[in-house]
Amino acid sequence: MISLENFCSDKQGRRYMDVVNDNRIKFQEIIHFFNQKEIRQRLLDSEIHHKRPALAGVIVELENLDAIKKFFSTYDAHTTIRFRQAVGVLVKLHMKKMGWYTTSVKGSLGTRDPMKKYENTKGSLSKWFLRAEHYNCDSEK
Image 1 (cartoon, helix red, strand yellow):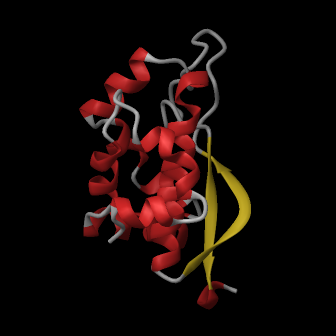
Image 2: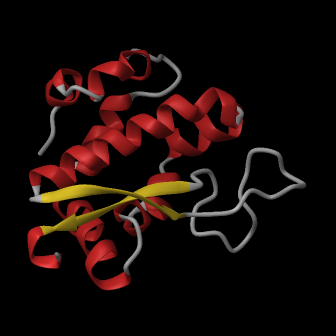
C-alpha cells in the first residue's frame, strides 16, 4: 500500500504537492482507490495478460468515481494535466512496490475527439487520459 506520506516523499511525487493540496479533488481518495488489493491486481493483469499499460486495467473504474467525473467534467484538459500526471506517479509507485519497473514506453488509452476538445472519442478505453506508462518485471525480460 502507498500512503499519502509515501507519495509526498517520493522524488517524483513531491513535485505534485499542488495536486495533493488541490481543494477541487481529494487526492487521498485516489490513493485509497489504488490501495485496494483488486485494483493493484488489475494493474498487473493489464500488463501481463493484455499487453496494455497498467492504468488501462482500472481506468474505467477510476473515471467512474463521482469525484473524478465531477473534476473532469468541470475543468478542461489544460487544468487537469497535473492531476493526470500525479495519477501516473501513483501507478508507478504501486508497480515499483510490486517489483515492476518503467519502460519509458507509453501506451494508448484513447484518442481525442476533435468535436469535444477535452474528451476522447467514443470507443476509447479512457474518456480523459490519452497515454500511460508500460511496465515490465524481471521475469518478463
